[in-house]
Image 1 (spheres, rainbow, N blue to C red):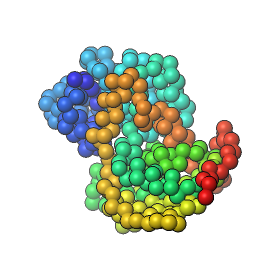
Image 2 (tube, one colour; image 1 turned 90 degrees about the vertical axis):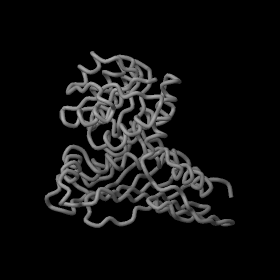
Image 3 (cartoon, one colour; image 1 turned 45 degrees about the horizontal axis):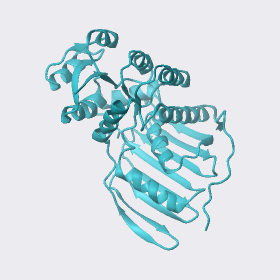
Length: 340
């Protein structure tokens, strides 16, 4: 039994992490921590009355833990992640791993220095649809145009709690970093070629929003492909989310919320009927349990977290300055064309 502490008891922890932990027989929620006592107490009751803390340092000092889940804002989670790694505690850390590249690299340095398990919370990458799109993308070939449009967090001014939570994300970070980091992560499973340049635009659709809520970003990849990401939050009506891949040998289109779509190549075509996009909490904890048993993460690693953080922060800079941003260490590569 893995005794796990949960730091951060907000909406993601309440709707995702804690229910997943309680469904399992290999993890035992042992303590919870949040600066808001009512949030910690609510999750403590769900876990059977475990101890609550308002300071994660105190929790780490007092509790006998085997692992820690961090469901914290990216501007505060790096300190907790480094402290856990220093103590030899495996960490499952919600994305994005930090709000600045310097803090992300500080976490990466701690992973390198102390070893152990560090897994980033890319809970969407474990869906069957991600694997199937990747399989078909390889058949379609490269260079390709990959387009992902995600519309989420509908604007409902009557739901003040939800609006305030998303406004907090817009004030302290961005929709591109929070939602776009998922896209950068699973799109890299379809085409692992590194990005070399990004151009982006961002705008507010409502004057009182605390930051831009509509983003368009285009990443040039080293093999000649393009990754186009559109993120829309807090829109009164949400357009359908969509995924498309167009390459030298064919194309596909998928509506990830329904799982419906199609694919075609020169010699074949077919319909897609996949499980719809949803957070795969149980599969994520399967991977975390396997990482703890192995002594290091194999999926959703610090490298994956840094790649997504670097890309989304570059998109933020491009949108802020109005100029494309090139990756500092980008090296052109030949196109990854497949033989006819």
